[in-house]
Image (cartoon, rainbow, N blue to C red; front, side, top):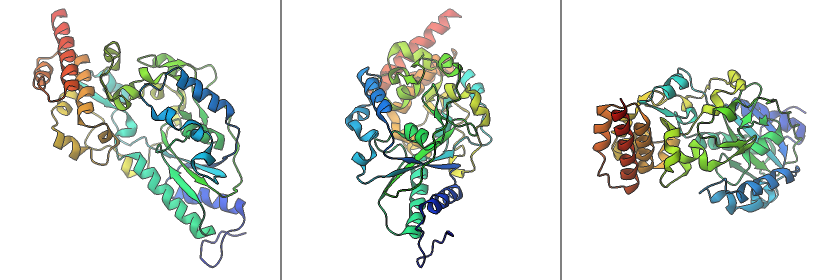
Length: 366
């Protein structure tokens, strides 16, 4: 049956519709679109999730435990769900400063490359809504809900079930043609679409991601203790960063890409065609001192529409203070820190005191 999205002729063949959905998805900027059975066996994944929670590896992310089996049983979250349309969109920006050069330059600020542009939550959900609109034009009203890291959905697990890739030992999704530098999104639908097959794992005996982790947060293959993960510490954790972990963070002020940077599969990572994910405000190569000098109004203005803005100004300063403490000694860094010694936030003041102590130790050691 030919695809026809006019109001006079609706698509009734679900195999034809599935093909059309993949075509529309790619036209909307997704580099791959796959379909999973919402009734697929998730018992092993569900058991693993509960064991992970029992060990406390979720840290302060209480929302990971709050929704119970809704993460692995789609119909409990959205009744009537039959299929999950899983999509991915590349985010590696063009003309970006080499990540290792920034990480090894102690006075620069490293920001995870996914966060250099516009907030992906908004971009992915908006494109998924456009995809839903196209499906509606083709088949008429149907029940659906779109997600992008925005609800209790096991994104990687469902993407794996759909055949978008396999879960790497760092727990991120890996794809043979795109590495891991892409965002995921989902659409729960009540349409009985044909489903795709899972792919095999291609990590083999490689342990580079485990070995490189600065805080050794990957405690076993496919298992991360979030309480040690730099992405958790700089983004999810709202309180003080544990002192023993601060020196290990280095200059990573928002997220951490080390496990991705060493992954052999990321030699296939694709540069994004999406302008929203291009570098904004020179954040791929900027000094810690410059960022620490931003007042709250500058923070709010420059990071408008960015995922970084979600952590808030105090947490932003907290993270940069740790980076400044870890930087090579300089009088300018000391003066920059001292200027915030009386910051209104006790959390910021505490991290500034620690950073000044680190700088003083480096000064006396030289």
